[in-house]
Amino acid sequence: MFTPDGRVREEFAAEAESAPQAELAPSAPGDPTSTPAREEDVSPAAAQGSALPEAAVESPLESAAGPRLELPGAPAGLGPTFLDLVGLLTDPLPFYLGDETLPDGQSVENLDAARLHIDMLDVLRQRTAGNLTAQEQTVLDDLLYRLRVRYVQKRG
Image (cartoon, rainbow, N blue to C red; front, top):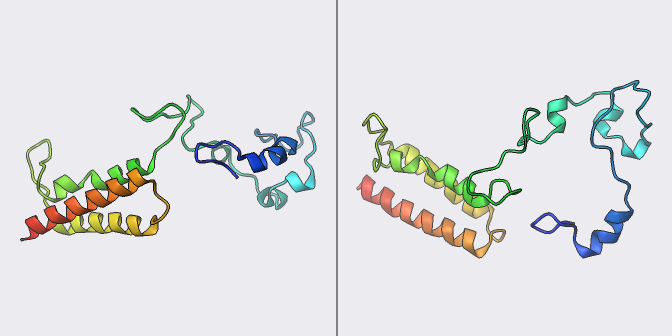
């Protein structure tokens, strides 16, 4: 229904324009200023009488104290990307492969942990096959190749 950048596709635009806009802020039960909800607008959880806590309604990237969280270097309005996920899984690998030391000079080389992270990246590659852009696929394939070569060099 939506394009990758979040816009409504043309074939669904007429349907989206005619659909009624839902009220985003939940009203307190018994509030005289609230409008009665239609039966089809009530979620199954609300129909059963269980109200979601206020924190569950807002986005995890938003906080009541401030504006939406933005990552440094990311275009405004966009959240984490697939390459951010790959980077997150890759971050500890130089330490586990013994190529980096902790700030206090200690080595935390752990080839079993390095193998686990490499295997997790491979699972990610397998599970996302056919769903990645050419750039994402190239980065992931190249990264896995380099990490596997480095792992074999360290393992001996």
